[in-house]
Image (cartoon, rainbow, N blue to C red; front, side, top):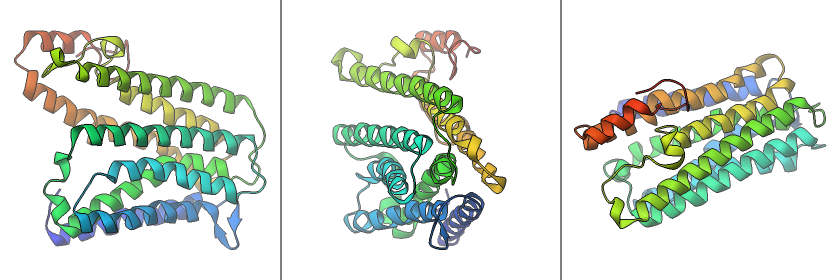
Length: 291
């Protein structure tokens, strides 16, 4: 991203604008807090938490609780909505449980990783530039809002109905995705702890099924959330179907797989074993395509 002040300000304004549009669409139906849609309150809270966390981060010039804040924001906002809605039906409880479990698990995992690895090279330049550093926190707020949007629709629905087939199917998809994501992260962490694997790439366990099984699991998590939530969406709230689509595009086209594949190719691209691994192992979905 450009580090010019003008470009940074434009990015921040665009991110906030998208958040505002999402708040209007998602808040077009559902429960309200006085005259304000609870969905809109959730969007504001997602951004506000990032701004609050940004203040000590920029003063200390540290990124150490950036990822931790992101994961916890999912859980905090979902939990806050559950307290605010009345009454909270089975769908709302299931969706909040999905988000809180995923968010807390992600936060703990990232916090442990940051402690083990130290500073994050992505922030070396921007954390000394207050405006550029603010931009990444604002973008994180947008990430939380867009990714959670389908769930927020389901949680704040006026008539969320009880436990039905959508909840059962979506919950099953979510659980499969979460298990795959947890197993993939655990296997890679164990692989890295073994000194004999220093400088090597993992090809065992679920990493033999997919080159990015953790991302495959995460995509399933948000598809499951959408399956549970969207049957109660009304009118403009259907815009929040973008939630799982956004996750897929983010991981496969923007900040996930493309960056990791480029880094891996630069590091191991000349090794026959790595080229053979790429040839036989699908990039994302197990059993779907090769290379």
